[in-house]
Length: 171
Length: 102
Image (cartoon, rainbow over all chains, first blue to last red; front, side, top):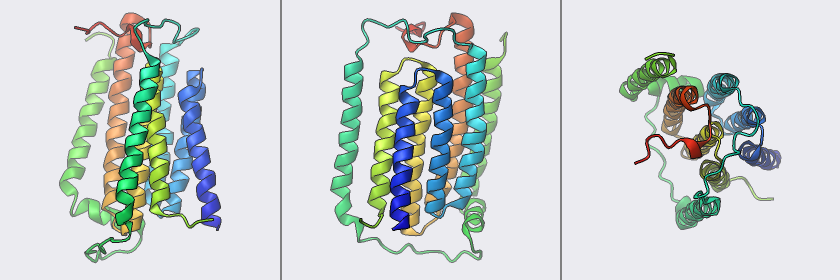
């Protein structure tokens, strides 16, 4: 019962904040709604027993990425209405219709695949020698997924160099 | 009230993803569009974590770690591009971003 109430409360918060992120006039307000959205998603991860990901969500998203967005908004220093100029050829109605089509497609996939929900084969859990969410995740990352993990670190390095090059004043 | 199942989380994820799609397709401020992309990545992450929870298999959570890493890289490079563009054209409106239009 408590889980049900918690889930619905979190869902309403997450979806409502997401709508506010998309509709807010002021970019800074939008970013602040985004932080609250990320924090609610982190709580959802705790409910799903993914504690490590909840901490990562708070640190990387709410702590790192959002600060990056705030700094960029400060640097571009938007005076007045950012969306004043509108391309006359732009058709927002078609955009909304396409988004509705995406939602319909997702709902279709959900209806189509929900029948096979019960027949879940029990995963052939390779008994990891450690207990707890963080320990097991670390075990997986450093054994089975070691090479993707290293590739991700290279990707982050490349992204860092690229960001520095792009943001430099004279190239 | 019903018990919360994985389907509930999937529906939440689909709704969040659709809100992100609407943001990308309708808004014209490129910073808002980047935030909508982050919302869509979050929807994917919720889906992965919910199914990892259902299958009691942590591989889904490993993928979420990679998604977060890619999201951080994307944010850094994308915001760098926004800064470089703003320096040239003094705008963040995507309707005016047509310097590479064929």
